[in-house]
Length: 210
Image 1 (cartoon, rainbow, N blue to C red):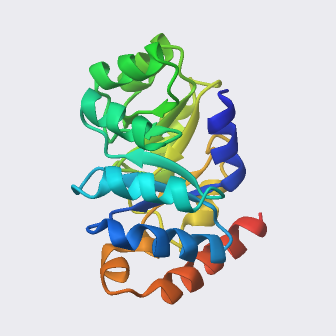
Image 2 (cartoon, rainbow, N blue to C red; image 1 turned 135 degrees about the vertical axis):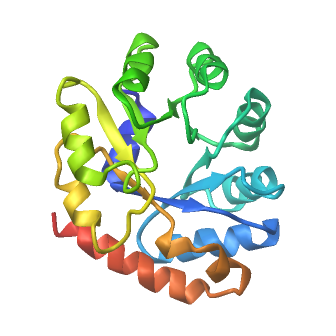
Image 3 (cartoon, one colour; image 1 turned 30 degrees about the vertical axis):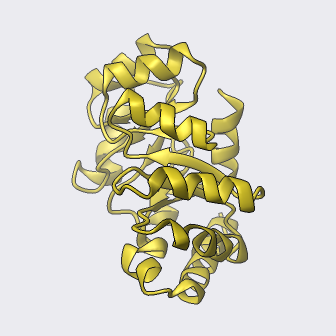
């Protein structure tokens, strides 16, 4: 497994962050660091994503930053140029995946079917994102779907929160989980960074209890 992805496995939880204004990037990063979770996936759902990644990488070197919701090769290039250490996609876009594989960029493509898992295996990938996890059948679906693929690890994302985090992380084929409940866009835009820290600490407590 790629060393970057191993590090994500050490964190166990990746906050999936949507930032509307790049000025909020560093305070958000500081809130996560204060909460004991030094990792963030900044999604390309807004025009502020690239600048947000660059600001965090420059000002908060202790925060491990990747880019999510990457839909195009150009976005992958922008993210890496800004300092993102990994790429996450919501679905399996062959163009984006192939670009990242060819250029040695760690990527976890989104999958929710055996066919997509085999597409990842065909490209030498052994970690994929199970998305959207809960709407796709949740942990029950993941256990059934993953059974034939002993070497593949999963990062479930979508519908994960404090109520089911421990259940997902207790499944041996789950490398980590992705979640946005501690970094809701409303918290960020309204400056509720202390609340983000508090919720993050709660999640870290769950992780440490495993």
